[in-house]
Image (cartoon, rainbow, N blue to C red; front, side, top):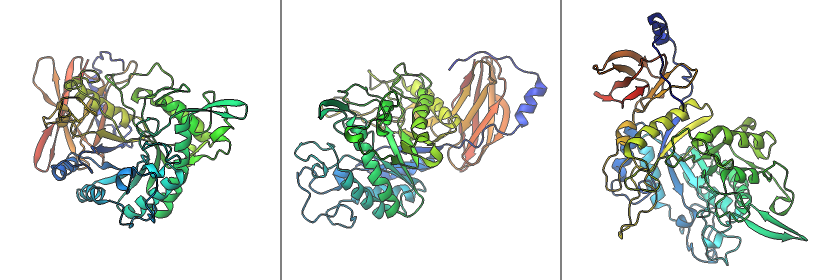
Length: 484
C-alpha cells in the first residue's frame, strides 16, 4: 500500500464529509475465532476463554471434527465389525469433547462453523495397506461420516467446512502421482482429484441430513505449495484448477481420475490466506500462490472455473470466507515471526482489507494462545496467538475488540476506518492529535449494526487518530492510527 501526505481541504468540504453517510456500510464482514487447544481442546481455562471471545465481539467459532479422532480403531486396517459410519448414535463414536465445545460456544451466544475433517482412520482409506492416516480417504465413507456429523449437530451448527487444507500432505496424501494409462505416463494432482470426490459425496450428504439452510463450504486451502509433478504440497491455484480437471492453461483433462469428471458443488469458498512476515497487501511473485495480497488473483481463478461450471457455485460466483488468518510473532518464532507491535498493526490492517473487499464475508483469527514449546524446548505449531503460550498478552489482544486503520492511497481521499466488535451499533467519539499537541475531539460517528464506521476525508499531515466508545458502562479506547 502506497502512502502519501495529504493537505487539509477547506473547512466547508470537511464539514460536508463529516455529515455524509458512511461509505460502503453494507460491507459487514463477520468476525471469527479458532484455537483447537481451547475448542474442543484440553485447555483448563476453555470456558472462561470462550466467554471472553464473546465479550470481545466474536460471532463465529471454528471447531474441527477430526474423523480419525472421533472414530473407533483409527489405526486398524479393517473397519470395526458392525460399525455404522453414518449413524451418529453408534456407541463406538466418541463425540464427548466436540459436544462440550459446541455447547460452550452456543451458550455464549456465538455460532459454530464445523470442519468435517478429511483426516481419515486407516480403515477408511481406499488403500488401507498403507500405514498412513490421511492416505486416500474413501469418498463414500467420508460422505457417511459427514452424514453422521450433520445428523448429530443439525440445529447446533450454522456452517459446515469440508476438509482442512487438502493441498497440504500433512492432511491429505498423496498430493501428486505419476501413473501409466496404456502407453501414456500421466502425472496427476491426486490430492485435488481426491478432494473433489470428497466434496461431491459430503455436500449432498450434509444437505440431506441437516435440512436447514446452513452453508457448506469447500476449499479451505493453505496459500502455499508447488505445482510440479512431485510436489509434496500443491500450490492453491493449480489445486483449484485440478479440482475442475483443468490443466494450467485451462484445457480440460479427460484421462485418469478426470476421465468421468463430475464437478463438485458448494455454497461458498473457504480459504486461509496467511502472509508470512509480509505486509497484508504484499503480492506474491509466484503466480501459483495466493495470499491476502493476491485476492484478485484468487478470485480470477475461482471465477473462471465457476463460470464454466467446472465447480458449481450459487449464481456461478463464490463469496470468500477467511476461516483462518494470523501473524506469527518473534518472540518466540525467530524465523517466521514479526514483532509484537507489527503483528498488532498487521492484524488491524488485514481486518480492514477483509471489510473493504465486498466478496469477503468472514475474517477469522487463528489462535488465542501460541502453541509454544515442547518440554525439551523445541518450538512447535503456530505462534499466531494474541497471547504467548504461557498467557502473556500481546498488544494485539487489546486492539482486537476495536481495530482502527487509515487507508492512504495515491490519488484517493484518505479513509479512516474502525470497528467496535462487541455489542453491535455504538456511538463513537474520534479524537485527533496534530503535531505535539493533545488529543482533542474531532468527529462523532454512529457505527452500523456490525460495529463498523468509515470516514472519507483529507487528514492533517502527521496527525494521529483514535476513538472511544462505551460498552457495558466501561469506556474503551482504540490504538492510535497515524496519517502521514
